[in-house]
Length: 445
Image (cartoon, rainbow, N blue to C red; front, side, top):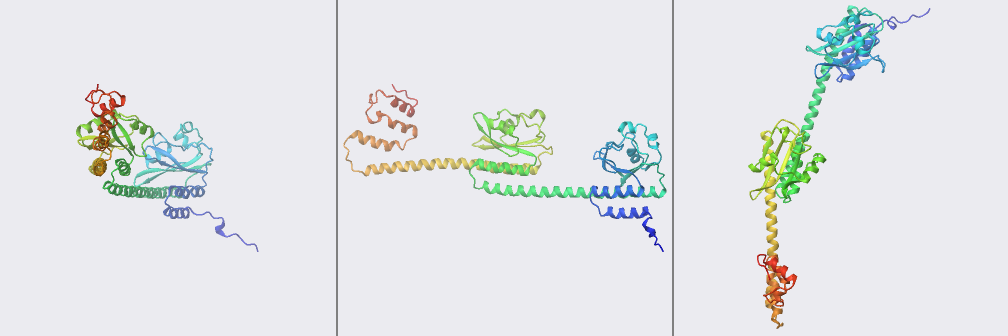
């Protein structure tokens, strides 16, 4: 007695079971690629289609783009291509009409769209189905199946395809939502990191501002802080030298060609700098007009500020920062800039005071040494009876108390009484030059 094959070995799986399986798998899917894989291949197998495609509407809402295909060879040209949503195309019409389009027999598609093959350069399939996908009445794209033979779509098949396209739309919407949420999360994470870096830079800058006397060092930290706080921008630090504003520092992101130009020096008649000098206060421009791009390589910048560093009532340097965005300088932005600028100005004043105190300290130490030498001279026994020798020794100590220009006269032989003129005529070139250095207004004979 021969055994018979089980009844379910050759019985095709009902479309309802296919649909249930795909629906469950789609519910657990979070990416578009996985959705395409779940929908296309089982759909082809369920209806004996030879190929299929999914076309999605792009971000502009005016174009259809091929998102996925199955069954077509890599080099094959198909009628399903990227193109405008409107323009008498099957995919666009299905979305426009909110209705599935079924072309069951040879030539049906070309009767509805006679120019399709000529426009795409491809041969139309014998039969096909074009199913629109909507999510909350918002069009997403189309699901398309192609058949090599004429295909009379049964009511069950139509129900299967319509339900499948609806489930695919829901899954695509969920995937897009997840992608948007992930994008927002990534953006927020980057924002938190940038805020953390900006906070750390601000703390370091404020700590240094309390003790640092090297303006260049603190300016470097200030530019780094501005780069953290104001994204997509560049900053420079310029000092006034020989009638030009010479760049002494800039952010690491400043284009090299612009850095070279700034290092060579900027003219003083630039509108922004001229306005800053006139006000002797920070100047903020929310929208930099095209005719104000007075420096080559700055056309990408849209907003800018310039903060003057003032010493003894005169602008000695400035910090400038430009951004490529157009949102304008907010009240908080201006507060941050002014806080940084005031700290830099205080450092400039502190550095100037430190330099003056150092010069006074050195001068006091020099005078103390000279006075000590004078006191030592007065305590030494006078053994030298030569009056000119005593005068010369005393003169050397006394001249140490005078400014440098007056000290130069010490090398003049006239001071020791051995000049050819004896205060009447200067004979040596060295003598004349020393006299002129000490008393520029006098003209020795």
